[in-house]
Amino acid sequence: MRDDDLPWLRDLYASTRADELAPIPWPDAAKRAFLDNQFALQHQHYLLHYADADFLAIERGGAPVGRYYLQRAAPDHLIVDVCLLPAERGRGVAAALIGHSQQTAAAQGCGLKLHVQSDNAAAQRLYQRLGFVVIENLQSHLLLRWTQG
Image (cartoon, rainbow, N blue to C red; front, side):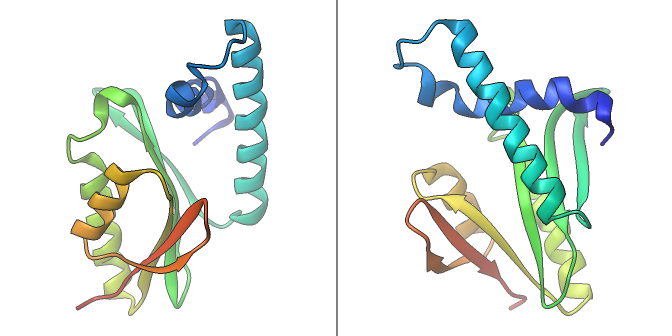
């Protein structure tokens, strides 16, 4: 990723919180300012705590449709974040990326971890289908781990 990716990354982040903010009676400009601030904080956190991660843009037809942040370290690689625009969800993109990460981790003798929001049932189903198991309940999030069979 590059600095000129920040505008579409902000929009991508906003798309992940649209349902959550829909019932809040704020003006659209206030919602957007809040989301932009939250994105900036998240982005700074990722850069600070996962500076050695791969920050990858996912594209379809040359247009950005998501992001995939992966930290490769022993004993477990960490999927820091996988996020797709709503129209791209459920099309197998995340499964393909995670499957590739599983192969890469296994080739290096590593497992793979990720966090998922406790209320994100669709993502939890995907991760469980890919062989991840819950190793810790952190209330708002679950920590999952995959190891090669």
